[in-house]
Image 1: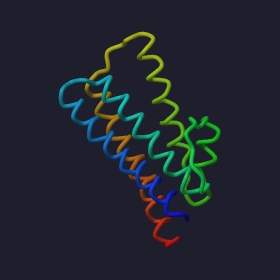
Image 2 (image 1 turned 90 degrees about the horizontal axis):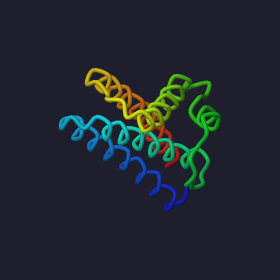
Image 3 (image 1 turned 120 degrees about the horizontal axis):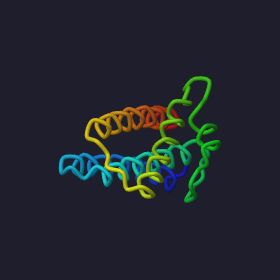
Length: 134
């Protein structure tokens, strides 16, 4: 894999971690809608890293749910629950913008935990596969 693509993968990987750190900061300040957006950005960054890793080409476009399913779900890494979670996050964001509904703290707790879990799952796939390629 080219050094440029490897660097792009690591940049997106670090960006996802950075977005989650900011999400927790916003959560601690009771800025739940901002934390939700940052969680979504973290998921987007990690899926871009995974896309570049698996396809060995850069992406700047947003992946559809079908493309996400093809990217994330494999025989060795079942990922339907991850794709459904990402779809729900996108739906919640659309609904939040339209209705400006207040997010409850216990709901945000669950969203943060699930986002962390998904990011760890995808991160392990990227890191394990990267070390095998080196």
